[in-house]
Amino acid sequence: MCARDAECFIGEAIESILGQTYRDFEFLIVENGSTDGTWDIIKSYSDRRIRAFRTPLRQLTFNLNFGLMQTKADYIARMDADDIAERTRIARQIEYLDAHLDIAVLGTAFELFGACRRKKEVILPTADRAIRRRLPFRFSVCHPTVMFRREVILQHAGYRDGVFCEDLDLWLRLSRDRSVKFANLEEPLLKYRVHPGQVKGRREGYIGIASVLFKESLIQRSPQLFAGFILSLLKLALSHGGTLHRYDHSSDTLSCQCQEIR
Image 1: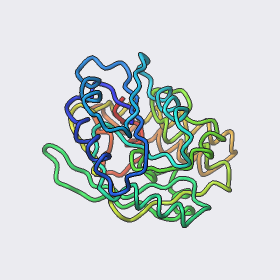
Image 2 (image 1 turned 30 degrees about the horizontal axis):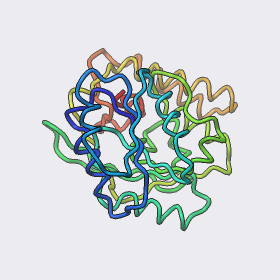
Image 3 (image 1 turned 90 degrees about the vertical axis):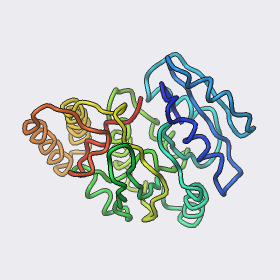
Image 4 (image 1 turned 180 degrees about the horizontal axis):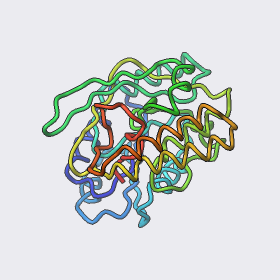
């Protein structure tokens, strides 16, 4: 879990992990440059499974990689500081990965919730082929729901520097390797909070998506990825300003991947 200026919600997020039915884990929290009481809340927990770190860099990709290097665990579960994990989340994902040795990245369905928004379940494609086919065009893997094999991520250089779309960039780089398999569980194992603090500009999100897709289309020589790049440019051209939550469930676009809390 990476956290910055998350005092409003981080307590719920932490407790949802400490309350998991699966108990044998270490909980890495990387606090990066908060100006509120986030660090004080983190340090108020005495659970021995928590290992908390502070870095002055307000750069999500650095802090994600920093967290990856603090453990030798086989599996890493991602968690955002404003979401809530269902009690069986870790158990169900470990069970699946143990039984499916070919799967490297495992996400789940999730439930949107938050102020002024009706609860809504979001179900994503479950099979590797369907995820790969949809990845250049629509939201396919929800980053805060993911559990992955640490070694595979490190073999593919971890997270790359960039202000936006660090997850899309990672998924696309992984997709170069056909031996890397994706999957999603149909169960909604995360409550994904929508709130005003995560609103970003629609324009910057589409620009971030377009740049990642264009780079990968050249590297992979992929017409499908280039088509995704063109589609993101069209969406950018058709957008007329305004704001967008990090997950725009009404259009179910890739823009959600660029709006994570920093």
